[in-house]
Image (cartoon, rainbow, N blue to C red):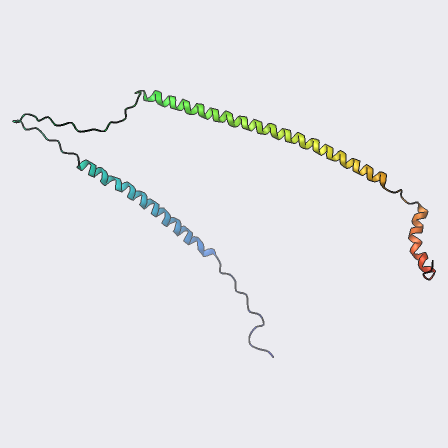
Length: 176
């Protein structure tokens, strides 16, 4: 009985995923904008703090010409760390020299490690060569033993009898 419906339902194709790239680009742009805004706000937030710090400094008061100057109490000033040595260029050169020495020591250590690894690799290669030689000798001994233990090949007469044996058995009506 025919019906209007097809025998098999058509397989629906999976939706193509080619439309995902605009979302990826949009997400990258949004992430970049968020990072830029956060950095901009962080740097903008420092400026009012500087303005507040400057606002707390009292203005300079000019002493009146008629009044004698009143000695002000010294303000407690935080000590500023002074460099031990005023030879800045010399200090920089010494620091670079120390860094170069450290870098050279690290380089020498890595070169030593590399050489040790190469020696170890060469030792492993030599060990592999000796093991392969022993393996080939063992295989040769095994094949020699198998050849020695193998039975001698049958003569031509024996081969003919072996081929004719089933025929001869059945020709006597199954009797020996």
